Image (cartoon, rainbow, N blue to C red; front, side, top):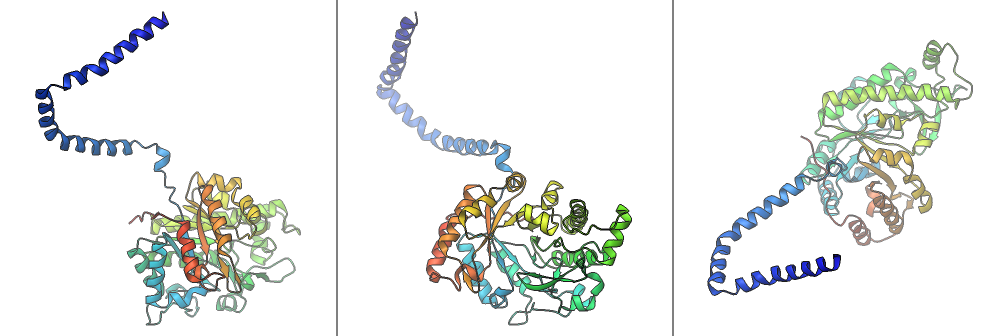
Length: 421
């Protein structure tokens, strides 16, 4: 039965295939079809175009989520030779655009000083630092204008967070704003040298930082604001008079002697989280479209040692993009850190990238290491941001041309991020 059905079916297919061919051999029919196609061809093209548009509009929802790939670079105080010169800024922006970068993170808060003309800082008695260019211009405004002309986002970076050197005017003028360790000492050693820590639980400190942030997003056409691993507090701190009194009032206990006591860590981390929630709300009220960006260390370290519960920030929907700093020369260690579950959780919700070291003044990083780390991040659907601009192709092991070709190979096609006006 099946065999007979198959034979009949085959005969039918042959007849159907041959019938039109025989019919179409008629000269009259051929001429008529040619005439008809002459008029139908433009209509068929239009139908095809509309069909493509309709098919695209039914792309699954997951493809329409804002997973814009981050291809960024931090511009630090080490980059001021570039930032203060309009022509060098123009060259830098053009080069970054040509190499298919899409985001610049310029420092605006470093060593207790702002990098732009600030009425808030002046009222606090803090003298201006470096914000004027070689012709007296506002370097932040110039960078933003030039970058936007090329389609790049600019997200000012509050690099020092709650950190400030003991010799800064901020530390000298407002000693009560700073916290201390249990033994009464007030400094720690960081990559920036000896520093003190503003008390993140003190209302005046919170107001000061908030005012600076709001001033930045209001005064400039910035695309957002970024806070890094210093928007935190080393676990040894929090034994100042104000914090001890607050903790005692809320818990009916004195702070534990062990600075890594779980409840004591959580209490302080929760306070920092509460401030970040308030800061986010303040920024969004002033500029709803601003990107609230954070660039912490990997989560276990950030929480246990710096009381920075950034995973909670993400779960509370106050983070618009995440860049996790993973400065590891060893590829195996690098891959292990970028494969952590909290990063995978974040990238399902917001644009997520990895901070990659491209070199320091006295410690250049080879291009091959950079390439392998970028590829590892890209294979996991992650963006990248490089620390820092000058080390991309200056003071390097390879010639300038070779470095630029290397970076060009990392991003072979553009991936511009949409600006929300």
